[in-house]
Image (cartoon, rainbow, N blue to C red):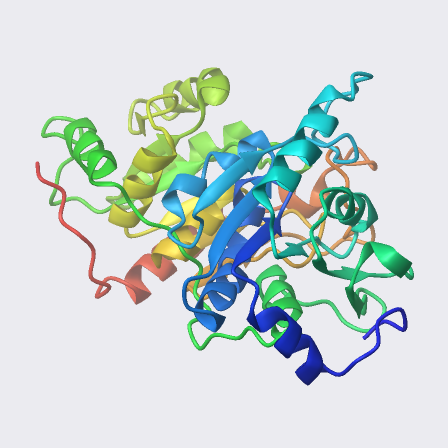
Length: 376
């Protein structure tokens, strides 16, 4: 516990027990929001009737309708986050503070990775008159936090991101025996995917896997030409590759599809998050760079081959059969969006044969796993 706050964990729990309207601050993107859902579940289960509002980025807000623990979402791109472009107009910040104040929250939990400073978000909640404010913090927050958990990472240890956030809310008496991530699949998404995988596009008797080649950071992308060769190698083993990607990634994905000699089916640009969730729920395996589909797969119980660039260590697949592939390098855990060494060896050094072998091994181990049937 931090020295700025007096009291014991028991007293903290008593203070938080009556908080009905709780603001969950997670100003990152889809994967980070998903890795926070077990902690949100713990908050919900600790107090019947508790409502959770998620304050997150516009990109993070896109997944909120698929998370059953979230009752409401407020989208906000703050100037202290890397993904927010430069701006001089502070009207969005003032409007967000005013909106949060009008919502009259009883408490706020500021969820961060250990390399993030919670102080700006703590100040936001302070200015919005949220009376109870909880976060990890390396520096003494003084009055910005009412409940300060001293930051132990990375000096003492590094936890998985899911464990970190579960530990945070446990400090105020909120625990859960169900530590799985939460993600619901809409029926409309299942119907759309069934139509996209209709006969002639996918043989229901043939094994198939999802290949996801995108990622927001260049440092987390395995080379597209390797994805194309992987598609060919999997096809030679009798496995149909299905390619996914956003509309902005469609050109790259189509290049991969073309280079696969026609063996891959591309759904790039055709799936919203609800449809992507339905596809991931259905497939026996996801092979992906370390980005949102990895965490969606983990939330849905789908095995993952994670092409995991060593930019940071705490975001591996949670709670599902997996293979995490990379190369150990001296420059690991750089936290950079672009490889500062320009060689990208931690990820580019992973061979196609390794990924194909890991994929076939994981498929063989998990073939008994029950999956919903696509209506073809």
